[in-house]
Image (cartoon, each protein chain N blue to C red):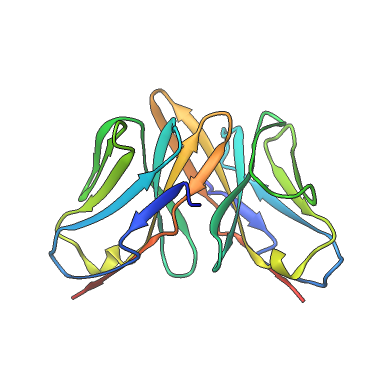
Amino acid sequence: KAGVTQTPRYLIKTRGQQVTLSCSPISGHRSVSWYQQTPGQGLQFLFEYFSETQRNKGNFPGRFSGRQFSNSRSEMNVSTLELGDSALYLCASSLWRGQSYEQYFGPGTRLTVT
Amino acid sequence: KNEVEQSPQNLTAQEGEFITINCSYSVGISALHWLQQHPGGGIVSLFMLSSGKKKHGRLIATINIQEKHSSLHITASHPRDSAVYICAAWVAGNQFYFGTGTSLTVIP
């Protein structure tokens, strides 16, 4: 079974630009979550999508947005990039299997804003 | 103010030692996750628990809801256990709150 894939793996953008990151979950997983990881702030929760609906949202400005498609693939968009947006962006897909919860992380997209 | 606190921040152990990593949280949670992140960034979800204890191989996670505290234990530690261990409190209908992580190095 293929794991969670994220594209691109590395990205360099300039301040003020916008960026779209993509995440393909494990087949059968309908929940996709996005996280930002920086050396200073550590891991932070961005948002979670389930069946094309945003179910939960972290404390990030409106410049950060996402969506989920009918095939569960998800995209995250950051507009008007700032230097502080440089980070590793991780997505994870998850599934409840009975009473067991499975969550799998993708390898991440390393975004550098210059 | 950090909703989730982990200790210690850094831990060095000899191979074979019993290791404990602690996580305290201040929010009302639905579940507590333990994650493992290896050098290079890959994250693995180890446990999700909302009560009691869970065991997987040499890893054991416990949680005390009343005391708002969870521990991750590693028995018979091995150099391949070297990683950053992160706890995350899940507040249902809200979001995850992450600890800052415990960097574990196991020396052969």
